[in-house]
Length: 406
Image: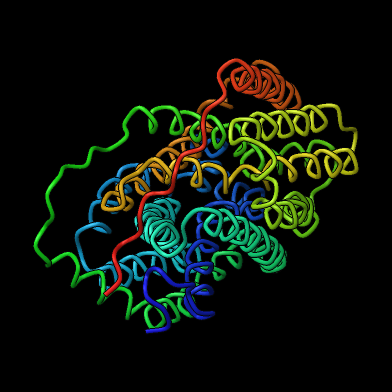
C-alpha cells in the first residue's frame, strides 16, 4: 500500500484517479466534429437533425438513469469489480460507431457508453473524496479539472483528425479507456481491499443523514450549467458551418480552444478558492460562460467564435472543481458514492436535456439567437448568485473526518 487513506496518495494512485476523471469528457464532446458528416451519411433518416445531436447527448440519458445505482454500488460493492464492468461497457459502447452499420446500432452503443461513464465517473469522484480532504482536495480537484481540460484538447483534436479521414474515425478514441482502467485496477487495489475490510467491520453507533437540501441546490445549478454549456458541442459546429467553417479539424480546434484556456485556470482553483467564496465562483463562472455565448451570437466568422470560446474557457475552468468541492464538504463519509452518483446524474441530465431545450430556441431565434438567449440568461443567473452571496454569505464548513487508519 502506497499510503493509508489519511496519508498523501502516491503518484500512481493520483494518476489513476485523474485518469478516471479525464475519461468522462469523452462521453459526448469527442465526436462533435463528426456530426456534420454523420448527418449527411444518414440524411435519409427522418429527424436526423435532432438525432445527430442526440448521438452526442444520448449517453447522458443512460447516465441519468444509472448514476444513482452506480453511486449505491460504489458505497456497498467491490469497487474493482465495478470498474471492470463499467470499463467493458465504456469500451464496447464507445467504439460502436466504428462497427455499427445503422443509426439505431450507434444509438444503442451510446446508451451502453453512458452506463460505463456513469460508473467510471462516480468511482473517480468518490475516490477523490476519500483520498483527499480539505484544502488538499481543493488543490487536487483543480488538478483534476486541468487534467480533464488537457484530455479534452487531446481527445477533441485527435477525434477531429480521425473524423477528417472518415466520420467513424473519432469513435476509436474511446479505446483509450483500456490503459486508464488497467492503471486504476493496479494502483487502487490496496485501497479497495482496505475499504472492503472496513465495510465488514462492526458498525459504530449513530446515524448519518444525506444532505438532500444541499443536493437540491447544487444539483439544480449543475443541471443548468450543463444544459447551457452543451450548446457548444451540439450546436456550435452547425453555427460554424453557417459562418462558413466546415473543416472537422478546424471545428475541433475551436471546440478545444475553450478547454485549452480552462486547464491553467483549473490548476489555480485551490488558490482561487482561498480568496473567493464558492458562491462567488459559481456566479463568476455563469457570468463568464454567458458572456462567451453572447460573443458567439455576434460573431461574423470563426475568429469571433474563438474569442467567445476563450471567455467560456475561463468560466469552465473555475466551475467544475467547485461543484464537487462544495457538495462533498456537506456529505457524510459513508455516503460519498451516493453523492457522487447523484451529482453525476444532475450533470448529465443537463447534457441530455440540452438539445431538447435548445431546439425550440434555434427554431424561434436561429442558431445565433439561441446562443444570445442562453448567454443573456446565464449572465443574469451569475449576477443573482453573486447578489445571494452578498446578502447571505455561507460559513466555511469543517471537512468530514476521513476513514480511520489501520
